[in-house]
Image (cartoon, rainbow, N blue to C red):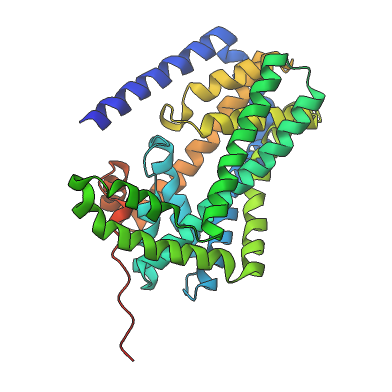
Length: 352
């Protein structure tokens, strides 16, 4: 019940912020700017938005095939597109669409769920790594080229450095096979009431971290190829404002402003917020565009185009969910009823 209340409250807050931003900074002016984009501009923007799902799917396929799983690119693409509507409405503190992707891929190709889950985790680490890499570069360029106040500079540099350090430590633990999940479970197992519940989870976590460590270390060339392809999705997010300004105004947007939009976008997306960042994203764009002199009408127009691309991806994902008969599973995943820890442990190896 509390999840439903939280979702309803956050949705109402998002709608309220959305209406506030467009009433304050002008809806009709934003629509006029969107009209200047034309069919070519909208198509280019939508394709760029789709690349944030296509590139990770290609990279994920490389990881799965490297582990001997005969998974096709089309399966990974369908899984990623089906996951988008769920990720859009699920706050970032929940599991998102990973259970749906896991079960769909495992059932479609008859491959073990733990192996698929291990590649999902590695793929997610790669996505976060790509986002943070571009964030670090973007923060350096934005701070160097944009005349931010001292407080804003400190906040940007501090937040980016903190995220990079946390990610670096997590990556070091996985690559070094330090078993962070198992260590946390062992610490919690000191609580007598939790000991029995955590015993089964510990065996699963240990096997899972072994598979993740192998995926990181056994096939370095394929891992780097997968990481490079994943980086394309982050670059696609970076160049969205460039596409918008070129087609809307035939204006070449400066790199520092592109980097600034990228930073604001990913800071918003990395925090628990309203469904799809509704209202919060629009407010962030309006504030940043005003600070750097890009205009409130352009901010609202950019937000509208971004929402239109979200709607496009939601429609594609929803169509696939219905077409492939995944409605029931998608509904359970969206409600948080399908857990990642429901994955069955791998069968023991046959006796010699």
